[in-house]
Length: 82
Image (cartoon, one colour):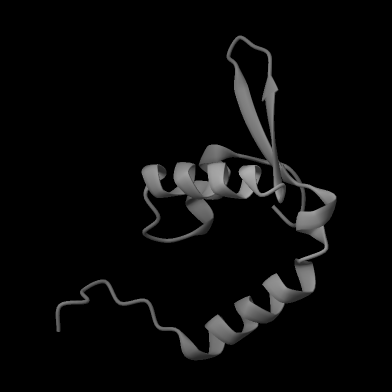
């Protein structure tokens, strides 16, 4: 959401292996904490967009630093059993 408002499916495709249920839970938590704003766009079809609030946007340096760290140190494995 840092580049701008995004729809649910756009967000879902940005994180490999993320389930729609987990994304829904996290978006609700972020909204409850005042970091994300949910906007319903009248239809048909009705659409929902999510965007960072001012408080969420202020976290951008931290988010980017975590992303940089993850790129260096985290390997996503398709099979975590072994």
